[in-house]
Amino acid sequence: MKVVTGEIDVTEKKYPPALSEALKKLQLSSGPKKLYYKGNWDDKIFRDCLTVVGSRHLTSYGRRATEQIVTEIAAAGITIVSGFMYGGDEAAHSSAVKAGGKTIAVMPCGIDIISPEYQKNLYNEILETGGLIISEYEGNFLPVNWSFAKRNRIVAGLSKAILVSEASLNSGSLITAGYAKKYGRKIFAVPGQITSEVSKGTIKLIKEGAEVVTEARDILKFYKVLD
Image 1: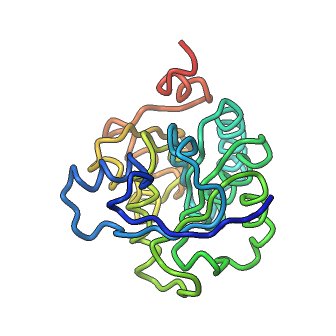
Image 2 (image 1 turned 180 degrees about the vertical axis):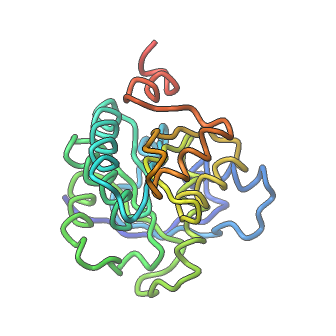
C-alpha cells in the first residue's frame, strides 16, 4: 500500500469532526490548528472512533483485557485511537491491527519520528493495514516531556468514547480521561484489583461515574453495533 503524507488545516472540511466539535465546545484556542498525517486519511476512519488508553506498566491482566475487548471492537468496524506508547497504547494498536481493523496513532513527535523507536514494526503495520499516523508536529520534531501530555487532548478529542484499561492515579491515561470528560465523552473503565497501583486510576473513574466494562458488548451497544 502506498503511504501518503500530508497536512490538514483546522478550517478544512476534512478536519476530524469530533475533534473540531470538542475544540469549539471548550473554545480551546490552544487546539491543533494543523494536523500532519501519514497513511490513509479517509473520512470513514473518523466516523466511529474509540480511544483506548492504559498504563505504560500494563499488567498481564490489563493486556489480556485490552486484547480481548479491543479485538472484538476493532473487528466490528470501530476505529481504535491511542497514543502509540508502550504498554496500554501498544496493546490497543496491536490488537486492532491483528483483528484486521483500523487504528489511529497520535504521536507526541513529528510523523517521521518513531517513538518509542523499537515499535517500528507496529508503526509500519498500522500504515500497511490502512491506519493512520497523525501529529500536530511536523516531520522530525522530537518528543519532549510536555508534548506527551499535550497530545492527549487530541487522543481524547477524536473519539465518541474512551476506554481506560489500567491507570495509576497520576498517569497520562487519567489526563486523557480528564479531557474526555471535559469534551462530554462517554467514559468506560475496566475494573481491576483493589490492591494494584495500576487499578487505582480506573477505580477512581468508576467511582466518578465511568461505566464498568467486562466485555466488548458493553461498548458495542454504545456504538449501536449491537442492540
